[in-house]
Length: 412
Image (cartoon, rainbow, N blue to C red):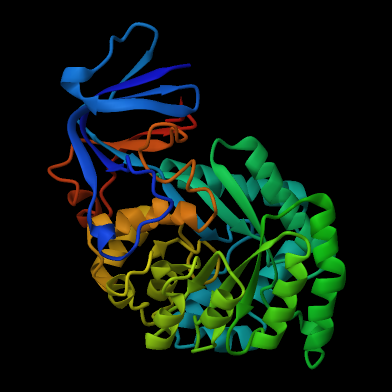
């Protein structure tokens, strides 16, 4: 049904230029309309403007925004929300001084989640994941990328990807699936790492492609995980099946994963806590989106990526949540954007574009999502009245989201 949203205090995140991403200094510029209205027809935005040009209410379902601010929904381009159980014991281990790598070396981390997932049914995985999906939708997320990677066997990786497909079929969010069989080496392959890489290439990838379960492939290319050679082999194989590359790069060290991702045309390189001039230079002029995950740096007590240097170099910085049970157990993109301001000195405007339009670009869906633009999918949320746009990230823990609309439907 057509929807008319009236009495909007301010619309932010407007992009009448229909850009597919926003780079460098342009990230700190944003068109706004005060005292506004917006209309939809089915699942698409059909118009918006100032109150003096508002159309008649006849034929519309009317939603009164009550003077609140209307934001485009977040586009979270890096999550792992399909997992079994939780890992709060590792939270205690971190408190007692163990590092991410030390926990992994003791059989924790990704391998811990793989053990739990193996013993959990597909239906139960779906049920747990949908709780998280409903949680993030209520917090403003309207498009999401979900990775596998807690299976580490052909059967369990396929189980995860089938759950992601079910989520896509049962939620109004846009969902993109990424095959991340190269998340860690299973215990049985210690000393036989190349055999596991061959298993991914010769068995897992063909099975994923046969069922059409993923749009992207990802590899954890970092110290102690997959080497550059492993990563290139997997990405080349995946390309034969039409799966575009993404890379977990430079979380733990300067791995050269960023440079490899750019050379191989990766859609995004993610994490980037260990990044400097060489990584920034490699990304210049490329189509690869640098995706920063400040929630992981916050939770693990790691250094934050050099967002200011990236923006100064003209890059299209992206923000995502990394929602997962071990290193970022939250999908609150509002908190992610606040962290970006607090710890990486991104302005609220830069952070909003990084979490919306640039997030959509990092999923290949910017033509339809990520901004308030006529013709795009009607994904947005409305806050309570705010003293300013900047107040939303400043008061990061105050419950301010009042209504959520996804694909033109009011979901709360």
